Image 1 (cartoon, one colour):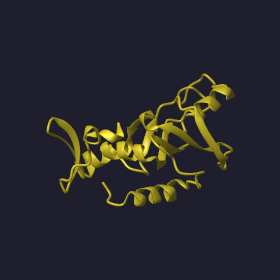
Image 2 (tube, rainbow, N blue to C red):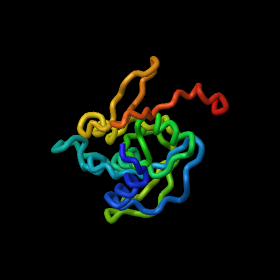
Image 3 (tube, rainbow, N blue to C red):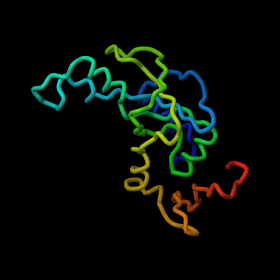
Image 4 (cartoon, one colour):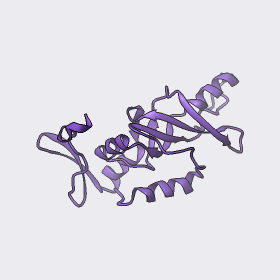
Length: 169
């Protein structure tokens, strides 16, 4: 895992041209920049298919794009992200049923530029963590004291058992 969480976020801001977001997330909430889904913009249901997709279905599919970048996280959310080997700037997939969105503008193709507000539990998977575990081998999943723990190459545990902090419960 990179030692500076802002460096991953800064790389993603540059890579995906993420506009400024409206504020910092609080508590167990995360703010996610939703990435446009090219498959959702397709004119047919399957690539090369013959059945045309109605415009209202394309619009719904684009709003439900599952991919995004975490741009902000509340303190509890940061703890949960860290416990699970993730950080701000992570490329994630989210639940398609996230209701709260904030539009900040339009892409060149006319699609809205949106940020999604969600609870940390609405994150379904991380595209980055699989890279850190299998390709970079900078993160290892192991068991210590009967608990699953992600460890960096340096051997420092990144997961903390929440029961050690009863005030947080």
